[in-house]
Image (tube, rainbow, N blue to C red; front, top):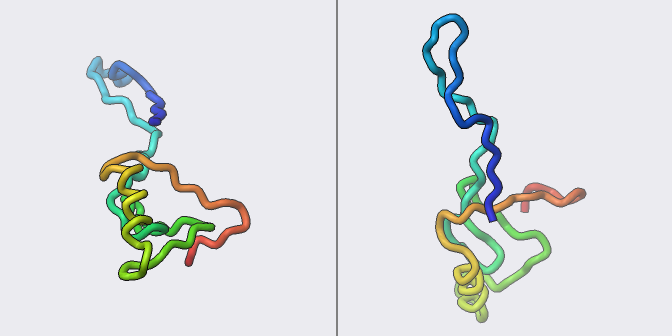
Length: 93
């Protein structure tokens, strides 16, 4: 689900010139999913992200393929995602 906020639909008149200016958007572009690294790590437009509280097999370990496939079934490259750091958690693994 994507939420957008529009700051204006029509260009505004620049004071005293009669010419139009393009509206400025304060809405930051949402981070996007790029690819699966393993069952608990993904690559995003913001960098590599590990999921807090999830521990799945690493590449080459039994169960890796199943864990990675689950992510691949849920997300497609370019999908917008929400990145949130829960209170009390570190931002480094």
